[in-house]
Image 1 (spheres, rainbow, N blue to C red):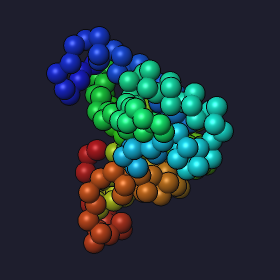
Image 2: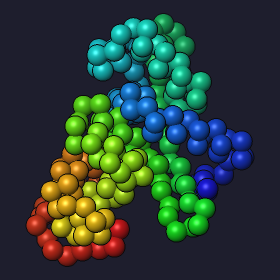
Image 3: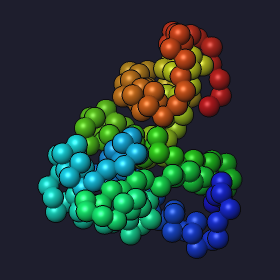
Length: 192
């Protein structure tokens, strides 16, 4: 496991465990992504924007503050919270796979709550598979890969590839620079 910033090992482990919670619990990921999009939010704004009960909203916020992925930006009432930047790179023990966990991936996991295609994909391929699909989705939106190439590379059906690429499209456009004049029908492929 490596870290892109210079932090002591204890901080890296804490970051990893905090991010693991976000990737495991889509409701927490959804809340983190919401605050990332808004830059700051109060608990009331979270309740309204995510349709959360007051107790649930406070419990989630407190968990994420305790985990270190949210911070209090205004201590006066109502408190305002902001998301801490997450950019954690995990390398598998064999060194053959590397995953970077970013707000975009956390946002995609959070959309599991409201998007059946993302939910199904995670059920079938886990979060690691979703991370790979997100990489293909970015490449697809940049005109560098097609759903057919993704399907062939990942040994999934072209329909499954197209469905997850479409489901991830809003995440890609929200988190990455994408030129609007790129055609999705290109047959040029790149290794992703």
